[in-house]
Length: 397
Image (tube, rainbow, N blue to C red; front, side, top):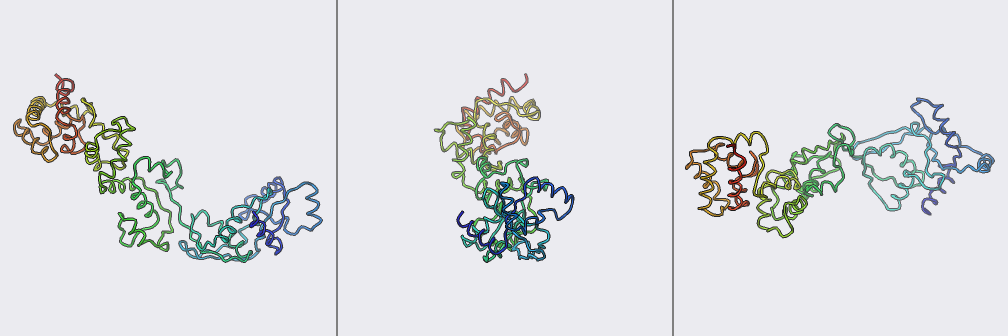
């Protein structure tokens, strides 16, 4: 506050600021009188008060604000690093408050003093601040401060091209962390909001972005926050991330869903992550998809599944599958394909009649992770129990 007081004192002494005693009622009357005038704003009523007039107002108990005296006819010009040259005539800016009646400085005044004290050389912010910049430049000049370089980035819009807000869904950074978005993916996505590399490549490492980025190549037009693109990008990062890195994140979501306990085998957890990471957009989705790996019974997900398991050849197919599984024991990933084909050859089934019918009986779903990932995770005992359940409860007699 001593810094602000010193700056205000200088502005008052040099005539760049003055005390304004107008009441809220008088200001409202002023606004109503101006009507739809495009140059609405304070009319400078207290610009040239005499000492006697000031004393009279103070005797009434009026607590003044301090306004900045805007030049009457001056072009305020600055070269924006993103928007280019911007010119604003002083006639469009009315004398604005720099200190409120409670002695608290306003933003436009305080930030100038703060930035000067911190030797800020570049001010980079959203384009919604462009209207503040000429006011701040006038204050910089009046105080004899060096004016920093400004850059105003375009706003981020929602899919409906309105300013991004809560109604567009998640926009708090923690929500993306809580859903299992990878930090590298979100960094990559955010960097491309309003900027793109020369080769228009979209999957870029942090180092590549840092090396290629230039503020002079930031787009002037607003960027649209496309959640579908973020999901695609995050999915790409998940698929290219080692399952050992994803496993701790996945474990938290599976525990929260009540599917596993803290002591769940690490090897099984890695197998689940391997099976699901090709299918998810963010790690939290693994909890929804992982239910097929737990329990001794399944539920048919839709009519298509009911139709597939009701085909006349399914009972024989499942019985032969169980018999050969009991002979074989536990299946390894690389053994699943040949094993199923051998069962198909023995029963005379192939294609959907083989693979999809088995998938529905064992998972309740027509689509999902690869069978060579599912069967080793379930294990012989659970697979046999699910076949028995399908034969007894899912297939219409």
